[in-house]
Image 1 (cartoon, rainbow, N blue to C red):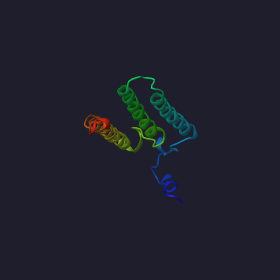
Image 2: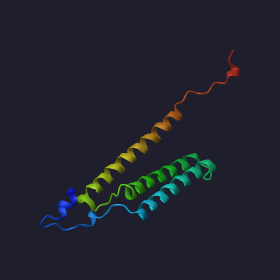
Image 3: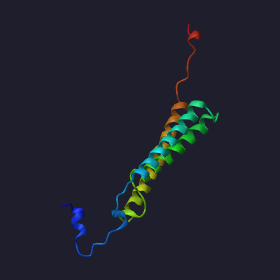
Image 4: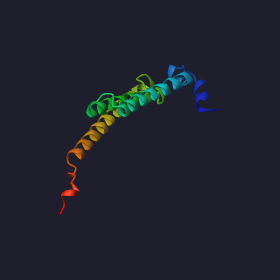
Length: 127
């Protein structure tokens, strides 16, 4: 007998909504389709150059990345504010903070690498 079955037979046990199965086929398929769409759109934006501005394209791709992280957390990790006394909400807040730090740091590093790269010398001008 599993511990979950034992808990159901204890006096005072009342089933809670979070005791139900976390995921359903429909939920997983919704998450999968959203993930594919949130990957295909930025890929198309970058490959086609549809926005015409590299910085704007970068920010839009980062925006799609943040939305995709949220989709994964909701549909695949089943995080919401109702389960486990709000601890998953705390994990969500922590994840958002880490993602913001990571994205901002990545943009900062890429900007400074681009700005501070050594200039390209024209080899034809060398003696």
